[in-house]
Length: 452
Image (cartoon, rainbow, N blue to C red):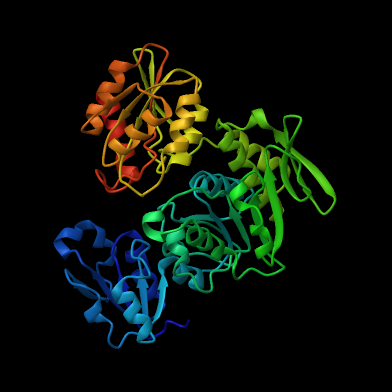
C-alpha cells in the first residue's frame, strides 16, 4: 500500500506502535495514535513521538476513531477478533500489524524465524553470523526491536533478521521472507488461538507468499512439523541432530554438515558450539541452514557458532553464591521451553515454576521432572502454582514448596539447595500475573539474586 496522504489509525502505544507511527509519518501518512491508557499512564513510552505531527487520542477506545480512516495498524497484543478490528474490516478499512507495515516499507533481504521455542536465540545467532560476514544486519520483530525502526534506515543491500510470533502473523498480508525458518511447534498461546490447528496455521502463514526462488527451513526432528513442508512452494531445507537429511544441516560423527543439491560441506564439530544443550544444537543447525542458503562461507558460520554467547534471560548464569549457581531462564514461558532447560541441567537443581495461565498442560513437564536425575526440588509461584503442584503430584513428584512472591521463591530455593547445586528460574508460564513481561521478571530475578 502507498501510505502517502493516507489516513492511518495506530492502536496500541507499546514499542511497536510508537515505531509504526514514526515510520508512517516518514512515509507521508496522516497519523492518529490511540491507546486505552491515558497520556499520563503511557509516560515515557511516548517520548519518540515528541515533535512528530500526529493526532493523539488516548484514554479512549478505538471504535469511535475509525470513521474516515484508510488503514488500521494494531499491536500484536490486540487479537484480530477485537470488536473494533472486526468493525474496521466491515467498513473496508485495510487492517494490518506493525510487522506487515514495516515489511512493506523496508529495503533489504528479509529472513524470518518463527516457532514456539528457540526463536530469539536463533535470530540473535543469525544476526551475528550475517554481521560477521560483513553485512549490515538488523535483528528485529518479536525480539523487542521494532521492525519499523529498522525500516526507517534499511538499505537494499542490508539483511533483516526478523523474529515472528503467531500474534503478528494474524495480521500479515504481503509479508514475504526470502528465507523462512520454523523451529518447532508445541502447545502455547491457546488462550489466544483456541486450538493447536489454528496456532499451527498462524505459524505457517509466514511461508504463504514465498515462491520457488525462496527457502523454507523445517526441523526434521519435530513430529508436529511432519507434512507441513508439503504446504510450501519454496525450496525446502531441513535440519536434524538425530539423522542425516538430503538437503539441509545435520550431525555426522559429532560434526555439523550442510548438504544441498548433492554436495556436502563440513561446518564445525558440535562441541565447538559455545552455548550448551541439545536445544541449542537444534538452534545452531537451523541457523546453519539459513546462513548456507544465503551463501555465507563455512568459516564465518564456524567462527560465529564458537563465539556466540546466547541471549539474556535464556539459561543465563547470573551468579554463584555459597557454591550454588543461580540461572535465569525467564524466557521459559511455556512447558516445552522449560523441558529444554531441565534437560540442560548438569547438577542437582531447585527449579522455580509458575506464572500467568495460558491454558497449557503441565503434564509433559511434570513427567520430565520426575525422570530427570537433576531436578530435586520445585518451588511454585503465581497464578498457576496450584495447577503445577497438582500435575507434579499426579506424576509422582512430591518435593514441592509454594511461595507468594518471586523474592520468597528465590529465598526458599536458596534454603533448599546445597553446595554444588543450581537454582533455576524457568517458569514454564508467561509473566503477566506478576510482571510486565518475561524481561522484567528476569531482571527482577537477577536483582534479587545479586542482593542475596
